[in-house]
Length: 93
Image (cartoon, rainbow, N blue to C red; front, top):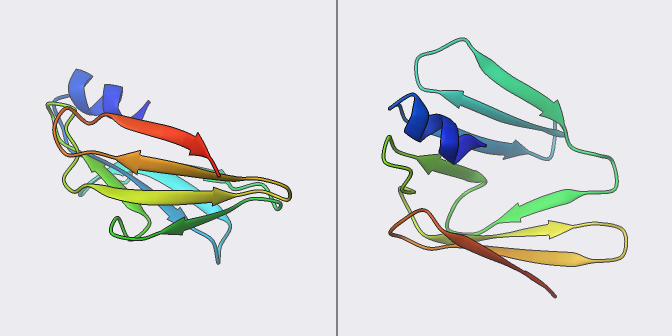
């Protein structure tokens, strides 16, 4: 969704995760139009190089490669974001 919005609106969009506040947000820089949703209580998100944020430019590409781990009660999923076309893949750990 975030990548598509960046492409369709030719704007930079950012997806950020905040475990302390148990929310994730999608929005553009300098805009007060931010989509904010709760992260379910049984899920936490752990970032490495991405520092809990994914940014898509107007072409749909990400600004930095990195990995995010999504922990649920029973499972861990690894999302790897690659530089280039904004593609990523998910594996169950």
